[in-house]
Amino acid sequence: MDNQGDVWEVFIQSKPGLTHKHVGNIQAMGKEMALQNARDTYTRRKEGTCIWVVKFDDIFSSVPEENGSFFDPSDDKIYREATHYVMPEGSKHI
Amino acid sequence: MSDLDKFLEKIKNNVKIEPKDWMPDGYRKHLQRQMSQHAHSEIIGMQPEGNWITRAPSLRAKVILLAKVQDEAGHGQYLYSAAETLGKSRATYINELQTRKAKYSSIFNYPTLSWADMGAVGWLVDGAAIVNQVSLQKTSYGPYARAMVRICKEESFHQRQGYEIMSKMALGSAEQKEMAQDALNRFWWPSIMMFGPHDADSARSSDAMKWGIKIESNDYLRQSFIDKTVAQAELIGLTIPDPDLKWNEDRQSYDFGEMDWDEFWNVVKGKGPCNDQRIEHHIKAHEEGSWVRDAAIAYAEKNN
Image (cartoon, rainbow over all chains, first blue to last red; front, side, top):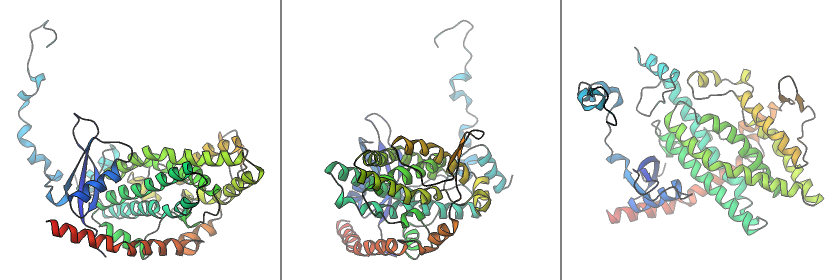
């Protein structure tokens, strides 16, 4: 089997001001080609104003099976939620 | 709770399965087979239509056909990309196609003999594919579902351009109408067989339904395609080549004749009119493109 290049994950911003959203991946040899392949594959109908490509090997992910312990630090900090605070009776627009 | 119970709970609650989640081996294998088959179909599906690009009857028809074939290449890429998340490389999938271990939709093993076939392919083949793909947008595997959403959004023009070709020809000269009817005659039965065997004869269906990979059964999807399509044929004065086709008032659906399953399995097993040609062409294009990959790798290495 032949070498088809590295896998690059593709992120597209659909409008200025919005976040870049992951759409899939492509294969390419080098970053310039990755950008062009991403354009040809994911934006044939003007879906984007900006594309990011990130080499798959450079992405380090958390492990969903470990979500319990990994995200545990936020579980007991309910004071980060606005609903934690009791407002005086009759107060409005707050 | 065991891994399997957790998995089944997610399926029950319509929570998508993602690449790093635990999944039964059978689920992974089923998806690898189905998604790669789907990807191969998009890629091989470029050939019957590519056949007419240089002979399109007008510049408008040519740019439309080019855009459609380009979309199919893109859809193949989305699907390979999604299939790779199951831990198998694209090169492996492609090797399985070229060594005929993997299948693709049998419809692409039929030849496209006249321009009217471009109409029939868009209207019927893409029409049938859309019915199937709309249902698959709800499939349980996240990357597959997301690819389907993308594909369905782009696919709508494919069927409409096909029906436009058919209607123009059906309402054109007597000779053009005859070409349109001939294309319908040849593509009707293979199109409705795209949905696969009857539910009772479909070996893998029950697992696929249980795991939420398939949402609706082969027969249900086939019936909904037929019910949608008959009126479209009548509207442009074409006749569906099935003497048993009849509206059933009780079922509020069309009854239709039995499909030729011997022919179906014959084509699946590689004995259709174009099986050899399609694979040989794929291998040839792949091999002739190797210098491009080599040059790209050399260039990337030089610039690193």
